[in-house]
Length: 486
Image (cartoon, rainbow, N blue to C red):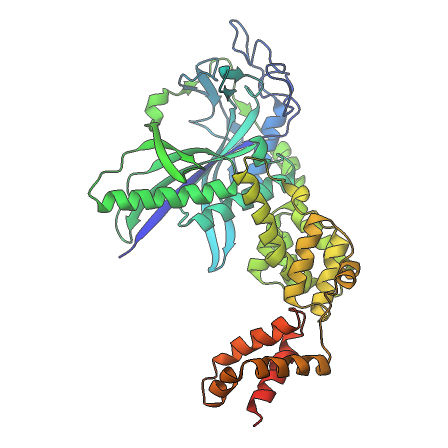
């Protein structure tokens, strides 16, 4: 019986308010260190917090969009722990009475739909940021102190790295659709802690570990796989898994221990005496619900009905708001919208992923959002139509997409300049077939003696003669016809 991973995610999301949660300091990313601070977020003696009402609205919107029960009344608690970037030595959070509970979302995996529960969504403040420098040591930037967060805690319903990434993508899609956060992982406005344990089917869950502050989908996927393999190897070697916080090292591809994992009792939660309960009236809740736009699932259903896409394909294309808008713009000018969808899911997504991986290897920040797809929608639509019409085959289509990622231009003009249009003329194709057969008489003889598997090899030879530009189906038909003729 094989091992199964059990995963729960804690997703931290910075809200897109202009000011911090308990003071008037700005929340702009990238400002000079320690310029957006005041006595409140620096925790100077006598400074008292005043709650930013916009945070409550955004948290409730997130709750409704994630199918949660949103409470009329919630309150703040103090989570006590010491860390250099936490000046009060406690974090204002919600523990006993969070704003949202009992939600869920669904993701479309290759194997079908999966429903993942959401335990709670609570409001809290962000901590500062430690900046490590080889020459000057560790420095402290307090600009992030007090930036409003929501923490979305999933049920331990996730069973693979793929599901974890799909869940995170869906959360990010929903939150960006409703506009409560930009969810820029490269700026830390969406970060994830992964709780992972292993067990065998029918047995109790094992001891979980937590991997902190993963800020890219690739890191989440790789960290899960690395920790799963570590736990399996440890248990099979007779070692005990301990509850602890671990970190994932991108360079080594391994996880390592940071500290023993705290439990809720270690934080000594108690109600914050400086902050009253926060309340939402029925009218306020109704206004918040009414402000929520069409969400990814609604768009997904529309794509399935309008364009005939599969549920999985539609889920991928609605994973982010900018991506859905890009697809819709390209589909609106394409003769074959489904070809646009196929091209995006295939070569376009592969190139985007490759660029992100290369940037990660080089220690650079990969482009995110619309910047990660440098091709104009109309140009992608034109290429999709060219491929659907058979004017460019899949091999040449890949070359054109790769070229457009480097320098966007009209694919029609690029194909003409580089002679990439499909060779469909029977005379040219027959010449390629004849040349391939004449150059490989042993293969031809083997085929005619019953070893039909050599047909693929001969097809490759003939395709190479056309420099990969042949109409593949027509070439295959002519080759088979020639092989069966004595």
